[in-house]
Image 1: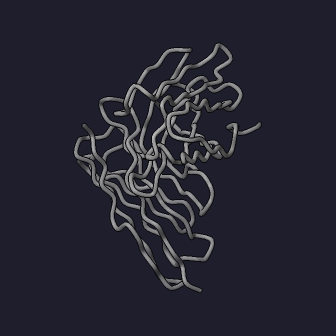
Image 2: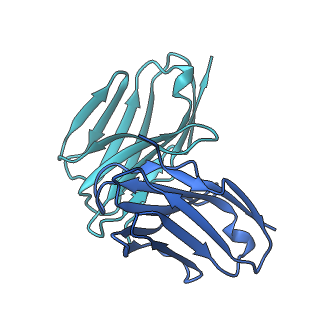
Length: 110
Length: 113
């Protein structure tokens, strides 16, 4: 079945440093979504990418979808303590169900 | 607009018992998906319901079942509970099946003793 791998599993950064998390799917995706889960909270939708090579920005966050629609990345510029949480990618493939990556837990040190 | 609600928020059961969890989607949303979240396995897809029909199913044993009512509310049931069923069970609603944004509820924390 479809698998979505996400790295790194953990990332500690100093406030103000940049952060990137990467996702790779075993199959071509129709779209990929990104979610953020704060400690003790539930996943909250950030963005959806649909087109090959698509790049979207939300303030300090930049999301990319690979040309082959099998990989994606989330980059945060100049992290802040409010960025703390676990970031999940979720890919939708031919089976139409959403497969989540294992998540990257981001810690921002003040 | 009210968000996704799940009841109960916390539950403690013993092995062999069964449990029913409830989810009320955002008003107007007709698709409800269920996920199991554990520290070791991450977010695992259980099933998706749309218009009272199961449209997608993940790789979970038959002890895990669900249903959806005509008002789009959904329940999931786990029978013959095992220790490994301890997890956060998340429900997510979306406008249509297998498309678009999933809006998650706060989850039900199930502990099996």
